[in-house]
Length: 276
Image (tube, rainbow, N blue to C red):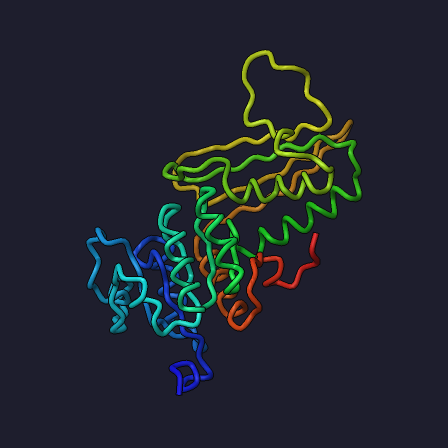
């Protein structure tokens, strides 16, 4: 009898990047849920927490110790949630494919190599990959798509995002996701995105989508889409005031992805929103 068959009512979860800010939040969420169980915790080899009981990091010892060995961390998991780093995600996804388990990728700033690994692994396992796991952001993207459909091409679009001073990638993955919604609605390309403005640039075109990144303080994540027309303006805004919303969304995605067919999924799929 397999480990899963002996525990049919629980979803066994491994966490990659388990000692980081998001990792610790996920530990808390997993330990307070009654339908999932923490069975593995992965960190990079130089982490000072290696060998530590991961639950002890949040004041709830579990017996699950942090390891840098992916095979050990994923051995009994049905799904792994990755909030590690852009350089580590490819290894996590490859290990998930090797074990034949589902994967939820919440790490942002992924390079082309990591994205290629995700695409290849998705031929063997189901993967939910999303730059923002919050429910509200998924609704924002859906509402933006509908708003663009109703307004047509007469409104100029600007996307403004703000994050804490330590965020390295810009624009944020969520801002790029919102830009993708605009590109699809208006048949645009990445060449139509203008990242900030300075000096005496050419007059704004109708196809242009402005992208603006703000970094400072401890801002968790703010995203605003400005649709500016003649005589009126619409602003669609989502503000995350706690990282807990990302942990809750990632855990929801982990429950959903187990048992799915191989492929790359988004939070739109997880929430059952109409595809755009």
